[in-house]
Image 1 (tube, rainbow, N blue to C red):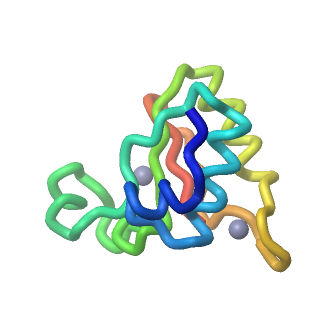
Image 2: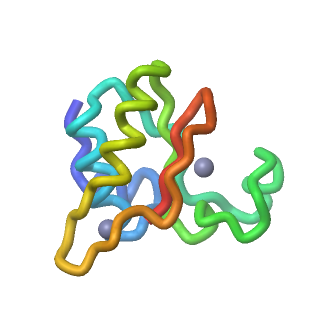
Length: 103
Ligand SMILES: [Zn+2]
Ligand SMILES: [Zn+2]
């Protein structure tokens, strides 16, 4: 299912820029499923997120998927540029059971 940047922005509370990246990543890797976007401080603590996590700012997204999909999506995310002046992800981490990317 195609998820547009505006859907991602609305559903996951992402910044416009992060939503644009997330939509491109999902288009390239349809097996990925977003599992976490913007978090409240309380929610972030409950899931063991680091203090100052970019999830608090709506800049980070976690994606579930197969190991193969996560590995492939990590390299796509690192190479992906969506706007003029875009310098790529601030964070791109293979967390084993999910991919964490922040823009
Ligand atoms: Zn960017
Ligand atoms: Zn994360």
